[in-house]
Image 1 (spheres, rainbow, N blue to C red):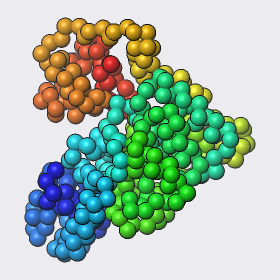
Image 2 (spheres, rainbow, N blue to C red):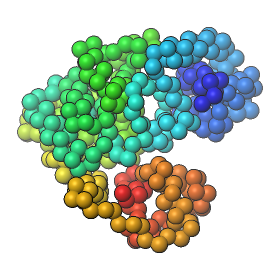
Image 3 (tube, rainbow, N blue to C red):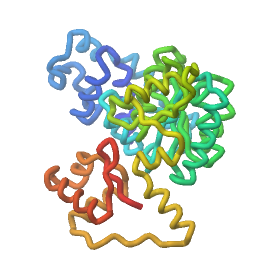
Length: 375
């Protein structure tokens, strides 16, 4: 990406004088942070309802620009990659959320647009019961959906346990942090974090020299929920960050699952209540989860590959159907509107094409309105 555009995006992301969704909407409408800043002295041409405070803020970007230059220099010297929203490396699932960050900072080698990705969240007071659930879940999931990406927050308890078991099962894992990538909180998890950089990534929306303040943890939960297909709650008290992540996931129209626990158990109360209130589907194993997500094809393909059976070729496709398949081959699990833009096919016509492809066993619709090209 052009460095000037990247610097402009970092500057824009620091201008928090008005709500983030409005800022994201402006960015998406214009398509370029550089263009927005070029109009900073006549911002009402781009944002007619801009308040006087916003207009004034856009006139004073000098300090923000210097901060962005310092940040980018540090990133380039320390193996940190800045990824703007219009970068193809940006998480596609997260980009669809109205309050997605304009820029993310990543240290590691993770693919942020994998075929499958889930969030595993829960209490910091993880019990032996929770640890066992995560151990079996990750082990079995690695067999049924090899390569699935496990996302969490690298906090104490469920988070670090999920990252550790992902590493143990050779699964890529991403930790979303509540501070800049020049530090690590909690420091005790540094050894796990170092392994994650080699087998996944550390990710943050925050510039370096940003402390791990309380509100940052709440805000980072939207990234955990937004960049994944589903959120799995393992253990939780009656209140907690894991429940916040689940609520956000539901708001994003993503699937939410929870493991039940003993009635009256402190760290299962949140899970049990969420299931009771129909906020999460009950699961007891990776099999339950894979079935509920409609990911059985992954498991069947894995079994077929292990048995030495080759994949059956696609049936005869029309030119338009092949066009859709080619787009999904490049980036799988896209929503209909995204496919429409990439193929330049109207929604009405695309609906019929996707239905035909589903009948031919080529694609399958999944939760969240995405279409998956069957492997």
